[in-house]
Length: 410
Image (tube, rainbow, N blue to C red; front, top):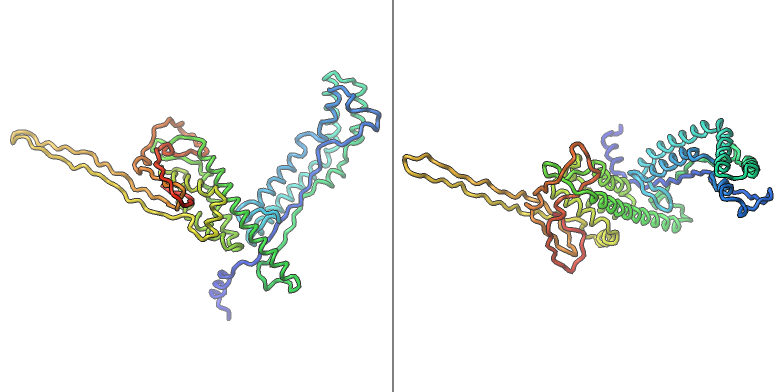
């Protein structure tokens, strides 16, 4: 009898050795006219401006191809979602990621075919009305009605039929499974397959680093657009911005088995992204850490250098809290007078955690200053897309060093 628990454990420990490469095969007909007016004895350069404009109008109304373009964009976005990365070879996916993406692509394919079925019966009428409107616009612009009529008739004859259009509106995709395990290689193609796998691993790693650095830069620009705090002194970020930052982690997680340097990159970023609150409300020190993390990750050269050398991307160094408490004073007057007690409020600076990595510059920020809110007008009930910390204006003392850096966290 098979021990079910043992079987489950064995499966769980099995390393993924195959990737799915997905490529889209989506085609769309051109909207530009390609006609030769010399066939009817007309030279374009001799046409009046109003009449010549008829030749520059698109074959279809603006809205006709919009639905197809939207579906194609959705398919392209699907290939770049969590669990995959785009490379010149195509969209590289883990097995589980490929299964979910193929299901979504099938849904989009059905929507594409439904749009074709909707457009087929009304195509001819739509084109006729479109050409008539173009001709009327030329006449309204003082074009010669006879010449306009001659051109409109010629355009109608050259208008592509629905059969021609539908033949060029295609939605498809191909999935190629590639094994990373040399035991599955063809003996006669061993070297070629090995070189291909190495190229695939390096291509995925390079694309992931590029994606992480690009996302970090874009998010950094996004959070720097505003400068407001809430009434409580916290910095308010849109939760979508937080989720976008955390999505870098999920993309790396799914593809970590492909290249040995993906896991260290994943673990370093995840350790810091896990500290972000889901609500989007950050304290001054939390925002400062987030901002410095994004600043470090935007540099591809530096990220590559530290990964290849096995250097830690992020090092967490605790900062000792400082506290000062004023002693309560008590004074007695005379035996006939009342007892008077005076106290001074305690002033305690909250501890702040800093993340330090050997850097080009050492950054130090007073913890109490970080936690001090700057009163700024806030519009009640209005959520900003992203808001930088008011602490960004805190004076920073910089001491140059000779070593390279990722960042200091404050």
